[in-house]
Length: 226
Image (cartoon, rainbow, N blue to C red; front, side, top):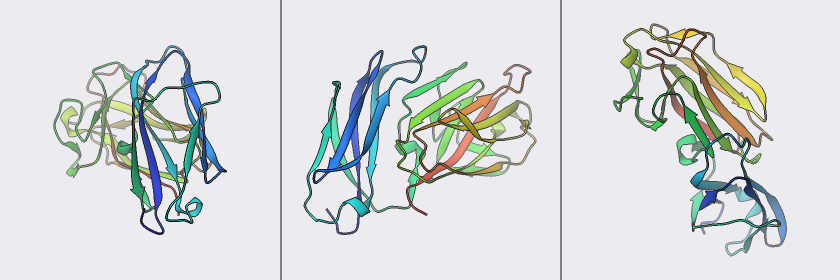
């Protein structure tokens, strides 16, 4: 691997009724716990993609041994190992362990009706189009330090809609927007997530039903280092 780079372990797996936990080590030294357990039994399961980041600080040698152990059992359908130079890590490169919403399913790089993400006059190539009520949950495993995004109601709502965006970490609210409509300018999100194991992105309907509530998480990015 290139000197001075970190790695991304990416694996396919089946999320059953419990999920599983893995212990990751690098050259015999603990690198962290990979938590792919189900957080709530009511949320959906099925085939998933999991990601675990190994920072460059743990990879001093050009050749190294990485071990993944499952103390209570687990499953894997495929493996990929990718170079990670550090810095920005698009959230869309992580598949959520849980994703649910009232209308259709969240869409990557598109709004809920399949058009480009657009808030006001600004279009975005990177992001997630959702519809209230919506929940996206990501296993971060304490590997990242910051989360940033731009949020707003998509122009597909034609100025209508009313939503609230929320960012939760390990069950606590880290950030919440005011009530936003399709007439409001986008809001910037910038929150620390150091030590956070589970990140949730939530969109609520503002308490008035979800008519026209097309909500966009644009340019959502994680940072493993400052």
